[in-house]
Image 1 (cartoon, rainbow, N blue to C red):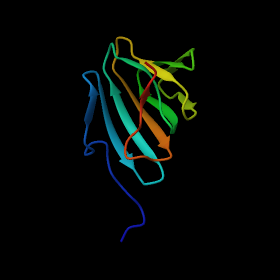
Image 2 (cartoon, rainbow, N blue to C red; image 1 turned 135 degrees about the vertical axis):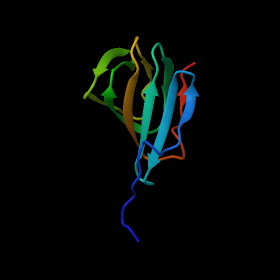
Image 3 (cartoon, rainbow, N blue to C red; image 1 turned 180 degrees about the vertical axis):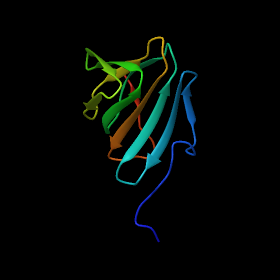
Image 4 (spheres, one colour; image 1 turned 60 degrees about the horizontal axis):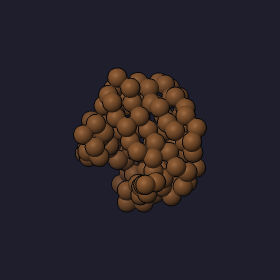
Length: 115
C-alpha cells in the first residue's frame, strides 16, 4: 500500500459556490488544498473561518480586502490569512485561478458571513 496520496485537478470533482466561482478540494486529513476558479466580475463577500488560509495565485489577479486592507495578488503571489480574520475577494475582467491551503482541516471550509 502506498504511503502517499496522489490525485489531479483534472479528475477532482468541481463544486459551484457561486455562478462565478468553483472549487475543487484535495485533503490529506491534516491539510486541505482548495483550487478556486474565479470567473470575471466575481465579488465574494466578506467572511471569516476558523482555519488559517494560504493562497497562491496560479493565473490572473485577485483583489483581497483583509481586515479592511486592500491588496492585489498577481500570478505567483502568495498571501497568508490568520484564522477568523475577515476577508473578501473580487476579480476584475479576467478569469483567475488560485490554490488555497487551509489548516486545520474540517470537512469543508466553514465560512461565517460578516453580515
